[in-house]
Image: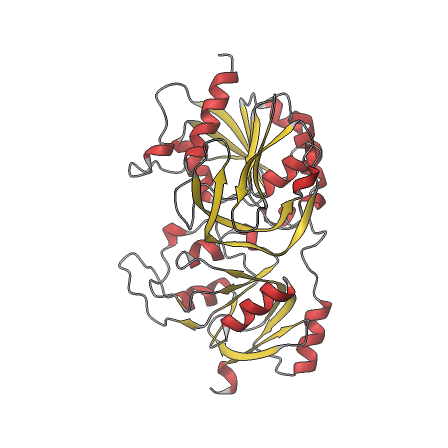
Length: 378
């Protein structure tokens, strides 16, 4: 490799690896996490929940099918940097609009391949989600490690305010007739839903639309009074990045909405709702990031394979008596879902919209519609 093609990864524990630059030039820092999905790299890169994080892909070959813009989960890339074993320079899929390399450069994402991603993943599993720097300009090991140690982690950061929409808007995504039957709108009324955007993925908003909701999306800091003034019949709390305890404005707003409207939360929304209802959250050693996590639904007894992306979780022993544990991760027994015992309020830690990932849990949007239907006076 020539000097122009090289790139380096420095980790706060002192590790420095050299690879090949396959994205934008420059430098980026963040928490190092690994994603175990075999496909869906475009959806991963455009998931706002990855703000503040550098993503390692454990699957060895990435980019084979290029990039199709219709698969984007937001309007831009959010991952701070992207690390791979091998990136394909070609795009084999007829739907693709560009190669992954061209797209990464256009998006300004620093990306590196030629890395020992197995080594990086084993290190992250053993030592936790360490801070790192990815650079195409600095090759000095001591400098790289120093930059990694000086980088800010996601602990204590309200990253939702960084990725949220600037003002309210009505979701008007096109209806897809091929969408799974589990979330196609049932016969009956449609409901007015207000969705808090903590970093909402487009397929979540599509899923709400398919399941019978006319959705208005609002910024993360929207006060409860503004939501109630919209004559909403339901509230949805989206996914998002960072530390849930730091999103204090949303915690205050959701606290004012509990007991007034039915609420469904996903990912960061689940964590914020848990805090509001008296539970605690903590940072996980290396989080859950992938499309293959088994979760048991304690209400039905079924095991569903789920798509996940989070570095914080609800502390199991902190759930107060008025909350019922509804879902458990079968890998590490962490909290994957809960519901209020008397109020129409429930949430899950994973991503039932599955982008990327399986559709085992898509029925939860239908469950939300049923809950709203049973509690709404028309």
